[in-house]
Length: 143
Image (cartoon, rainbow, N blue to C red; front, side):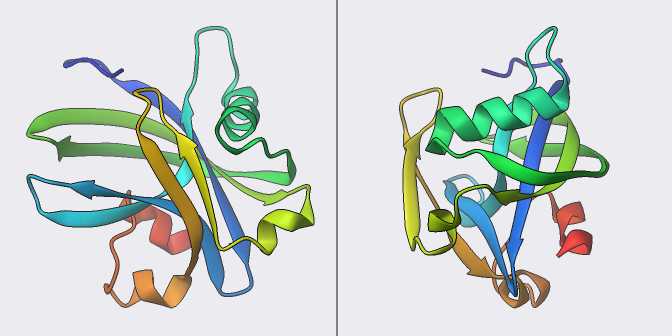
């Protein structure tokens, strides 16, 4: 849980399959807009961002990652539910170790607040055209 006036360090994994990217979707009720984001989560004290990435994928969807490559750091300042947020994102490009994940239409998991979250494959062009909203938007350059 993020509190105000705190910068959160996050590790996200960008998984591509041809012209598709694996992302989860959620809804921002204040902005009345759906958004999409790569999977991952917060880095815990004493943990590297790579370790956090691997742990989060294991916890959320029981997936192991392979071919992990560091892409860079993104500073993300935004407002969510009328609250200012600030993240430092360690972004990785990676693949699923188990090919079954490339065949799935949707994977449902629960976040830290026990809210059901759905992740799915989405065509990259839908984000590039602006039809769908990928956050943070700096991730678009890696699609």
